[in-house]
Length: 429
Image (tube, rainbow, N blue to C red; front, side, top):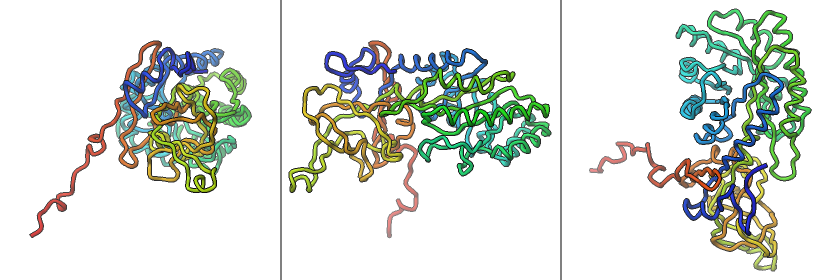
């Protein structure tokens, strides 16, 4: 569920008309509902009340500090994948004892900083990474808490770009190799083996891949415990999908029942890394119509391709261009007009710049607003300044109030940090 609705003929976020936000802040702008974020976290947390657990918000989905703070205020930890995310998480109030560090390419300075900060554990993705963590921890005279991310070779049946649990994916250590690496790690003085990690992909809409992966992880944990390893945590990752179009993903309780059942009887704490399921439907991208256009073919034949040109583009929301993803588009205040078949496109100089193709929408006019739904996850976090377009503002709504939680970038921001090479400024003689 979410707190975006049509009331008195126009869309509101909680009790704030989106029109008010657009008029005050401009477009394009990301708008987040605090009530939706809080509700989603509560539902997810309560679903796992039957077993010891830690929720670590996967902040790559949306790293805005106010969103992270919303979750940390509710007791959440954070799942990070870079040193930059570590810094952001701490700044947003995340206790380091509830930070897990994932990712295949951790750099030396990132590992050292995470060790210095005292994070809960590293999710290690390769033998060489394990050796590097051991080397750095030895130099710092510390013990590094680790789990190994095992790759169970399970097909998550999702988009190939966000599948992570197959043997051909770059992520994790194959489950057949994991036992040897665990035995090696257990012999190191500066490594403390405390967990097992597994994450098979994102936007999963079926329970069966989770169950398949959990069964293989449970068998590995049983073997490790029989070997005498003190496994205290099982990190089952995230990946639960949301509804963008007509998907019917499992609800958190169904997901929780499957996970709890798989690990019943083990004296472990389950770590969960939800991202999209917490923030995806808690945000929209608000954009304004600029122009309408009919293709030359349409002019000549009396039909053909129509374009709605809006001020949001692929640099603001990459998912449609990158994955072919569907986002529902809802006019903010248009009612009673005929429907037309259109492509909704942005100003970026690429034919791949679109928010929707062959979509039936109400006939819109220049200046009218459109809400791009389910844009809270992997929206702003994947945005860029391509075509030298400053990145959008971000706004959070709570009840009747809204605040800018990230200001719109300016033209000056685009060149901050740049300098002209000295040899280009020398005068010719």
